[in-house]
Length: 206
Ligand code: FE
Image 1 (cartoon, rainbow, N blue to C red):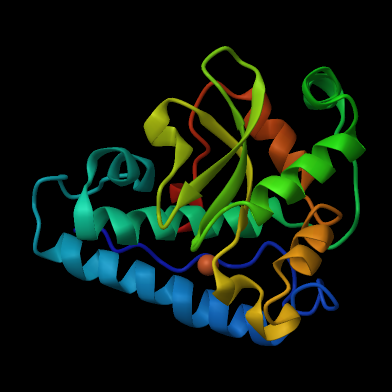
Image 2: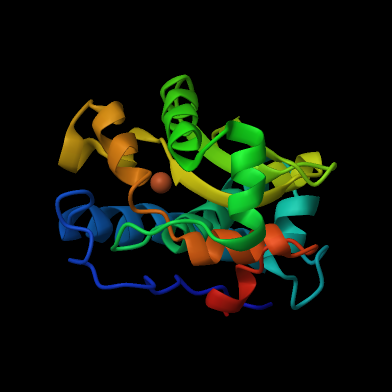
């Protein structure tokens, strides 16, 4: 059975300091994300129903219960690391056009994204997705859930589990979200928006 690896950050551990510290990455990637990947590998070892080389996307779509929780969290965190950028940028091309059409402006998108994240009760994820009509939406999911399972394509995500922000911002989820929206990897988001396939996180983990 294939063993998935913990992915590498697409930037340095200190590159987002002031927003996300190296200490948070040590815990969030090195302990939380690692535990999800390790537990998923352990469970797959004892389960032959997915063949020898399943993709992580396949596992996210086809598993349930305990294995889904690990596979979902393994995928969501890799997607989250890639949704982050050290520098403030801006959307371009078709994604920019779609944001303006749906939200009025990039600033209004950011305000709505922060508001949606604030309204995500408990542990979960706040996503920008492309829905089945090809339009943008902001959606919340709980625990390990992923919009791929509801026929939507993830464009970008932020983690609103407390472990994502407690070291740097304590209980202030708003302060974390306000910084998230100025640290979006718009190039990554644009690629996801332009693709008809599920974003491929397997490539970073094998
Ligand atoms: Fe997390």
